[in-house]
Length: 181
Image 1 (cartoon, rainbow, N blue to C red):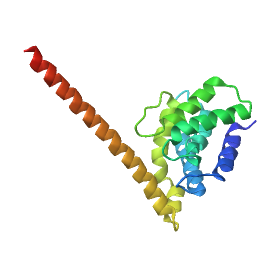
Image 2 (cartoon, rainbow, N blue to C red; image 1 turned 90 degrees about the vertical axis):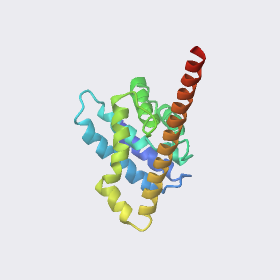
Image 3 (cartoon, helix red, strand yellow; image 1 turned 120 degrees about the vertical axis):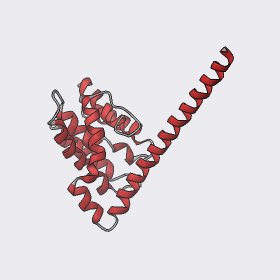
Image 4 (cartoon, rainbow, N blue to C red; image 1 turned 135 degrees about the vertical axis):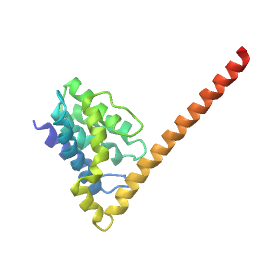
């Protein structure tokens, strides 16, 4: 069993029925670039499971075939189903891949070394030569811009939530401090 190759084939199969706003070729190239960037980053880390990195690279955006908005949560469910379908039972491996899928966004912090690598590689993939070449094609640049815009929207919402939390805490402290004196 070549789990990395199987993950790539599984992604290809799922992309044939994708509902994503991003084209199957965009997701495929992006995933390949994530894999290459992640393996370069993994080379610098000790005790990183390279097979987890390879499989997670192919699967990190697989949830997009169902729904772009909740793709990380959906992606974990799809990956779990796939692992069961191929009778893959290495729980620690699956848990690490799920961490990579679930926490590759900007607003989340991965719990594993592999998850942290995938998260960074996901962002760095847009400076990969193949992604830059794809962006120069007819519709490629609009897809890359849309992907980045979506990530920036998430960042803005996350920042707003942090600001609102800070304001709420500040007000609560002021209120309670005023009552104490």
